[in-house]
Length: 332
Image (cartoon, rainbow, N blue to C red; front, side, top):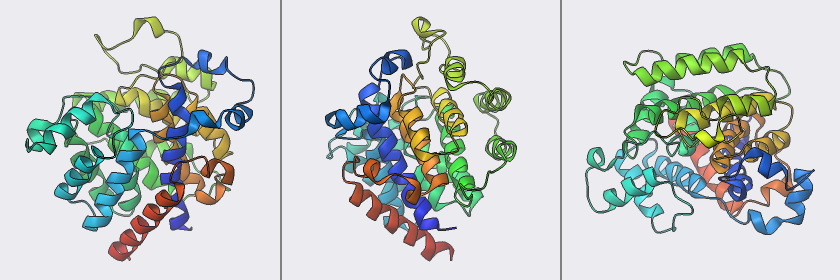
């Protein structure tokens, strides 16, 4: 398996899903689909809408650059890169990330700076860790947690990061021309959460088991069922009950991203289009699902016209390559 291709596919996948989903953030899936009959034509006719990615991609790239600089995870390198992000400047940042990172900039220790947010701001940036540590699963889990708690101290955020990183690690050596066992895939991501004394992790395990049992649902029905899964008062959005609007709570976003990916295993293009138009936090569903799909399909299976849609795609490919060679020098 060409691992460089998978590294590049994953990071371009994050950026592409983020780019395609950004114009639809905060909209119901039904409202998004009222704009077009054919999404591909809509993209071609409205390229001005897809001119940039968001903080999801920015922080993913900063995470990658910290791993490159430190030849793996180094807390100070990661904090340094996240503070650098404030100068990018941030594009559409979530409160959990920006509030914590601003505190880090002014010297607040990370344990005090982290917000008690269960939002998806750590799962959205985890792809480089899933890639770099795909052969060292013990380190993958521990570093997914460490990278998450810098900004989000809530256990849901850490759990979401582990699941996404583990999914990416599992899919790197899978050939998209040969079907993998979905049953085994679920076993792997569910077992990544075993052993914690966290009630929310146990709840997440139960939700993943429900997802497995409901993987036969249509995308629309599945999104309606799982859009706000795990969300509790006062954060549950009553007005979107029974509609496809993916909540920014980590568990909801990760579950919906996994669901869509597993429904569209025949084509990267079909998969990324569904992810980006999920509704609700569509850019982050696109980014998380895009990172997972890219690790499975690889860069060679991403259509060139879609790659060229991504701002700074050559820079992202270069960072992916540098990350791959850092991984290779450490593990081979």
